[in-house]
Image 1 (cartoon, rainbow, N blue to C red):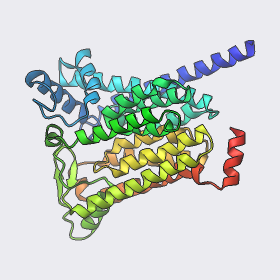
Image 2 (cartoon, one colour; image 1 turned 60 degrees about the vertical axis):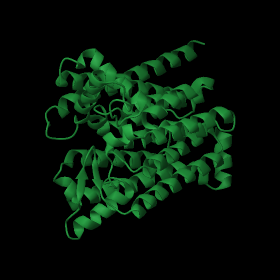
Image 3 (cartoon, rainbow, N blue to C red; image 1 turned 45 degrees about the vertical axis):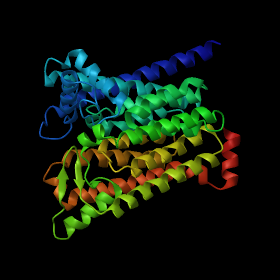
Length: 388
């Protein structure tokens, strides 16, 4: 009994230490990013503050005020406003970044505890290592909030809590992709899973409404998508006229075929992930395969912002294979480098599109590695079932 309690105490202390480490690194990232105001690290919180001001001044989002985020995404924006951000833009940036840093710390503890229950020890440490390169980017974005909701839903699935759908739905109305957790419960809770999936579809539909699309002002295809990077690279290496259109992001004007091909690539990855999940023989392997489904959601979209890579890291962290960890680490480092070099001049050059193309290839490779537990030879999968 004492040994069990001692082990539990050590595990709790480890999680506290991991969470504190992530929080400290997040604070250092905020201070470090402040030294480079010309970079795009802290570019989003001032826009978030502007949106909150417009809502308070003019009325409801979507109806009275164009708003390019899903409904629940406004929660961290409002919290930053109410915790001092109303005073000034600089205070808002710090309040928002501190909030996202706390999200990252809680995610670390949740992943470590979930990995422990799944017999995947060290998941929290792997998450920590993977997330370090992205911290200067993600603490200034709202993506850690969506990842927190998704990881909470994931933990509730592992702990067999029937209310897992609540954070999954909230996450879906933050960044869409957490709706993919419906795939973890379609056999045991088909109606609830279908409902979560329907919420994901509704969230996608919401992005096409005038009040959302008007502010997003998407033209053609995002320059960092699979097809966007390939087309941008070919133009940059050709006549040099990439033709970037800057609205709320960098877009390329392309034919409809490019948008369709891009969506088909992502849809193929998405379906491959679902098939891998059905073939995986243990809960840990199914959750790793879920990373492929999430990669498919990212790749299907007409928008692929640099920080979206964070969505994949929980599933990579749950994989015990060193090769997957290395792949995830390289992916995170390349993503940081793209953030570092991003500028209006850089997005007209071949180097940027070459880097984005490499990043996209790494995402597809990471998706393939996450799907591996579901496509291994049947005898190997049977052995895994016995071990788990």
